[in-house]
Length: 404
Ligand code: ADP
Ligand code: MG
Image (tube, rainbow, N blue to C red):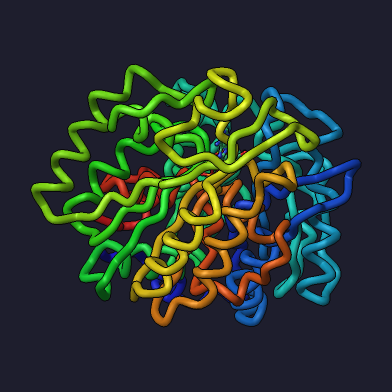
């Protein structure tokens, strides 16, 4: 619990500080469609600028193949960062090449420079430790100190997240500190009742978090694609809905454990069943025990929780003091199947206590449905990272910053 803070780096005026941010924003035709992660990086950068540091920002964007690829350039992100910081922000056309070296050397106190996408360099994500260390060494040439603030990547052992921090004095930025503060409140003595709402596509992705949370929560509400594996585990037929048959036994184990612990696992009593996976498909509401009794028979697809379930979930959420939500309740990308997710999101905004949204698609869903970030207690910038934290795993990018 001893995360090193920026203060521990001493006076930073005139020092070159490499800041590892997570500026991995969604882009459409070179335009940023959600700048949440850029906004989240501002407090740390503002602090460093105010101290007169020479600020060098590094990040990844998308999954380029370890080589330059114009569609993953950070140039539009650097421009947006300049608007948000209200100052001119430089941009280097490479990460550790001659342009970066020249622009770093020319950087003045309190100025900000963004280097091109880290993942244009194979060493960043290499499985080979020596290759990662070599690339981190090139980045370290630019750094008197390192600030790690890319919360979305702290569960990854990558050069800029793990090796670089060991080569120079390093500390966590304000975003990582804020994210951990919230996650801590979810794991250490959460205010009760504590409800966790899980949805999304695959139950197997979330088994670890279910196992870790069961002893800690009062209620677990199950929606999304994973609900069908739970319904199957309680003896229901689920038509052609998402089903992970190989997880049924594990899920039955959780249901038994929950009953022994007095934890409520709340399963849907109704679902929206569609003829096919499309926005204009015929669909009806069916009781959870008669999914195959609709006109679509065994080919029906469950694509959302039903209205009765959504109301029950919302009541349960509003009656809780701590709520963590990961995973959309249905296929929110298609308008007819977004209602369950909207009702649950609405209820989270009304929690008298701490409400947290975690997960990339969940965060995108609430913004797409028109909610504002500040209606929730917290929207995590890191889906995988926050889930792994809640699973109780050790995250390499936090361990190098002193976290235990
Ligand atoms: P997050 O990124 O928030 O962790 P996931 O990646 O686990 O969430 O899941 C998000 C996806 O789950 C969405 O694309 C959504 O369409 C899908 N989904 C939700 N409910 C269903 C369902 N009933 N059938 C199929 N897919 C679903
Ligand atoms: Mg996702």
